[in-house]
Image 1 (cartoon, one colour):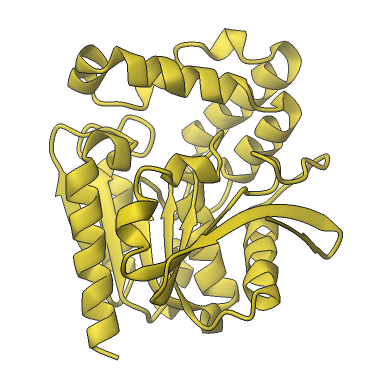
Image 2 (image 1 turned 30 degrees about the vertical axis):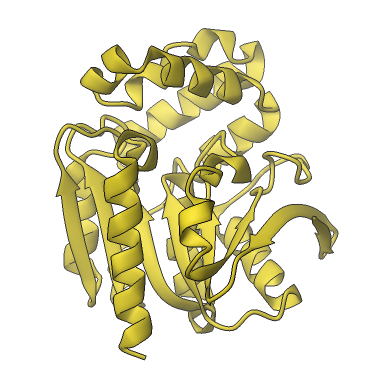
Length: 263
């Protein structure tokens, strides 16, 4: 389905019944990243997934983008669909958007699940993001072919080369300029000090072998968020849902059930 939000054409899908749950994909992804998990989640929740600005079938206007802009897009979508406060799940870039939504539109968020993400980007990482964005903008994705291998734990790469190849192909199908604009948006921010304002229950999922967002960032978030719990997952890289699908699904459903039962 498509909807126009303040001039931005957004592609989304809504399925299931129950309390409202929003799923936000990561950099280079799309709403289809959640395909394997929606059947289980939609048994208990009305799931909403959408293509973030610059990705999938949503509009890909020129940058610059920002976490605040992404959060505004989502807030506009929730408002247009007349949804109450929702459970929000975001992975990587999606986790950045989820945090910003909770900070800028707290009335829209009932709970947060933050996967493989962080609340700040250091100087060295900022430089790396900018370099990657510039290379992709100028040369496309061929120069970034090894990126897919880096996002998984080494054992997963060895045991599931087909998943790694699929991830590389899906990333390369993106619009280079939109991808670069999004990379810059999530490559420079720091709001750790603001997290104390987020009062909703928060679940943080972090792979111990995540080379893109190392575990230290999740520990920092857990300490800053007043109502957060952190699960550190061994033998797991950046894409927890793909690497540990059963753990992800059961942990998320249990967390959401606890929030719903507590009122």
